[in-house]
Amino acid sequence: MLGKILLGVAGIAGSAFLFFYANSFFPAEPKTFSVKKDILTGATFSVLAQEAGVATATRLALLEQTKPVYDLSQITAGKELEFVFDTGSGLLRELQYEINADERLTVQNTATTSQEQWEAARVSIEYTIEEATAVGTIESSLYETIVSQNLDERLALAMAEMFAWQIDFAAQIQKGDSFKVIYEKKYRDGTYSHPGKIIAAQFINNKEEFRGFYFTGEKTKEGYYDEQGNSLQKVFLKAPLQYKYISSGFSYNRFNPILKQITAHRGIDYAAAQGTPAVTVGDGTVVQAGWNGYYGISVKVRHNEMYSTVYGHFSSLARGIKVGAHVAQGQVVGYVGSTGLSTGPHLHYEMHKFGSLINPFNEKVPSTEPVDAGEHPAFDGIKNTLEKQLENI
Image 1 (cartoon, rainbow, N blue to C red):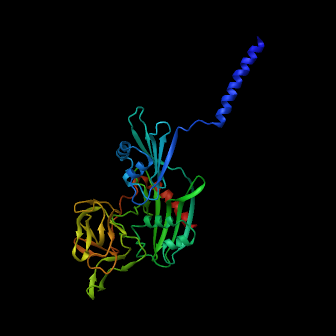
Image 2: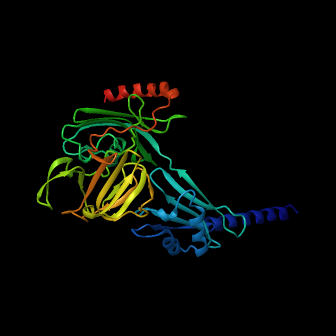
Image 3: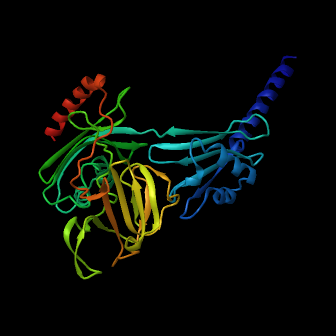
């Protein structure tokens, strides 16, 4: 009897061993598989999803149901879409897309029935952050100075954006200008990825010093503020383009290459490649868009009862730019061309005050909201610490 029991136990153990042995060599089939699609120039979400094997109804549902979180029609060339499918049914279960360096779009089917229900969310990408510093003196441009020190070129762009309301980095940068900056370096899975936010910076342009400090509070908008707590962000950007040089500056005594005579040229000509996007320097309403005589294809934006700006010689207007359209500061309004009275691709830019042409470089424009009065002590404490750090770089 005992022998039969032992034999039975041995038989059960043997079966378990065979089951374990077989499964160790034949693992269970994965429940999902993914298809990755590179986004090439001109590609659309619908086409890429179709190529990945996503059904038409699902593609339409994704476009519609994710729009409040992220518009999939705005995907960017050079990135990637990842579609995760159910192995058994072949149905789409999840979509992944990296919106930018800091956020990923995750879309999942949360339905418990056969009817799809897509839930979209922006998920922060996890990074390890280190604080870093940089200092330099300009020889030709901020960009070249940053690159010559083997620093990330994106740091130059971040600094230019930070001081975009104070300095025209295309027209006003000169040899001998200098900078100091405290910023974040972001690492992903132990590998350097990109610079994070600038914590504090100082830029000396033509012997004039500009400083900015990152601050956010319960009542203070996240952003950069000067030593007094005034926002660096102003009503108008310093320039509609940020490029290496301006072909002709503001002058009342300029030789007109078309008319072959001296004429008043009360605007700024920015030399730039054909098709370069130009942005409005401030919020406003489009009051003229299209052909405009010697301006060629142009746009005029009315910002308020005091100011308006004009952008001329476009090759074409940006999508949605028409009379009556509301535009936001930094929004693309057209693309550089050579239409109208022009000898080559460039952007002609004018600023008007109460209807009269003025020099935009000399105009003092107000800042947006400053640090909240109740949060000034907190701001001052952070600013004082950062000022000492800048001095010691």
